Each structure stands twice: as C-alpha cells, then as structure tokens.
Image 1 (cartoon, rainbow, N blue to C red):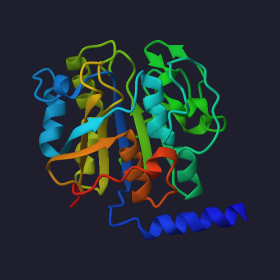
Image 2 (image 1 turned 60 degrees about the vertical axis):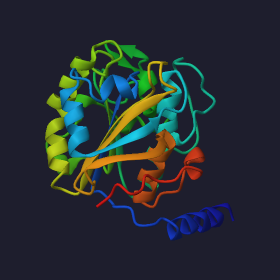
Image 3 (image 1 turned 120 degrees about the vertical axis):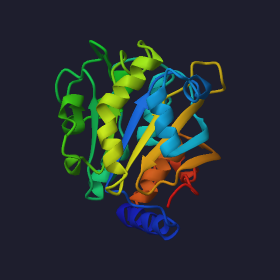
Image 4 (image 1 turned 180 degrees about the horizontal axis):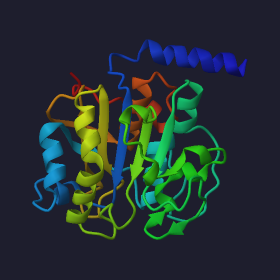
Length: 267
C-alpha cells in the first residue's frame, strides 16, 4: 500500500507538472558567501556578469539560512535536516536528489575540487570541505561522490544532473571574487558554450550571502532553452530544486513541495 500511495502521488505531481523544458544535462555550480550586490555589476567578476548578460539573471534569489552546510542540504534534499552548523561528519537518511534521479532511471554526480579520492569521507582535505558536499553525508552515494578531475571533457558523458563544487580557494570563500570568477571561466566556459547548442543547462548560484543583505544572492541560468534577460520572481534553493524535479518528473522533496518551479524564463 505504501508503494501504491507513492505511485499515486507521483502521478498527481506529473499531472500538474506544466511545460518546463527537459534538458539533456544540468550542471549546478555553487559558489560561496557573497551577496547579490557583491557580484552583479562588479568589475572583479567579468565572466559571471557576462554569463548574466547572455542568460537569465534571477534578481530576487535568496539563500535559505546560515551557515553554509544547511543551504547545500536544502538544495540537495529539500530540507536543512535541522542542521544549524557546519559540523562534520554528518550521517543522514531519507530521500535526496541523487536517489530520486536513480529511481527514475537517471543519473547524478557531485564533482568536488580537491576531493582526495572518489567516495572520500574526509571532512577537510586541502581546500576541500565536506560541508559543501552533501552526497558524502548519505551512505550508499560513494559512487556519485567524485573529484572534479573526473568531470568529463566529452559533455555527452555527463550525468543527467551534476553539481560542481570549487574548493574554498576558488569558490570565493577564502579566495577573492576575481579568483573565483577566473576559475569558473577556465573550468566551466566550455560547458556553458556547449549547453547553448545542445539542450543543456548551467545554473550558477551561491549558498548564502555574507550576512549583509538578507541572504540575497545571485542565481544565473545559461542554456539553449533559457531566454536571455532578468526575472524578479522570488526564488530560493527550494525553487531551484523544484525546477529540476519538475523537469524530470521526479517526486518533490520536502520543502520543494511548497515551492513552485522557476517560470517565465524558458524558450
């Protein structure tokens, strides 16, 4: 009966799914601890501002809470899991984006810069921080917990959905905005250009602001199915997750059930 009820819920969700695009691949890049006004219009971030000009800039995007870790959990599982710190290690249970994609016959991976080895459970290694990598907090996800060196050069080999997590030297946490901007250009520009021609999507967002702007962050969408421009609809990590869920007709996770998808930005 429990399985039957889950199927009925999924069918009901699909019936109201609406007409979102279904990208072949989605890559989500998460930067660190910068408010919207620190990024948008900043001459130290020319590449990111170029992405915003080419794609869709969400001008009212907000982190869920502080500090970093619960924001990553919110985007990954639709819930902060009542975590209020960056403490490590965590051992969590329940559904998440990787698991619901797997059940749908789709794929997921997190590519973390400076992760010492695939499946690593380290809390700290060089610039890597597990608090930014929620896949490491669920047993059974070692196969999707990968170093950034495994990010494929042939983008057709990407999972359906993947996260890219720069380390703290390159995500604007410890390094400068200019350094993070340059890292993104060097490592993701080829994918951004490819996504514009191959039914794929790049999402660049921040986990939280620096405590100065009510958690107002920048979120940018780039891809063949994205209209260029800006949108003032208010969104959070839950709306981003809901959008991905709805694109692939996945069950909605926790708080994403109450968040609508990002609309009015698709070709």
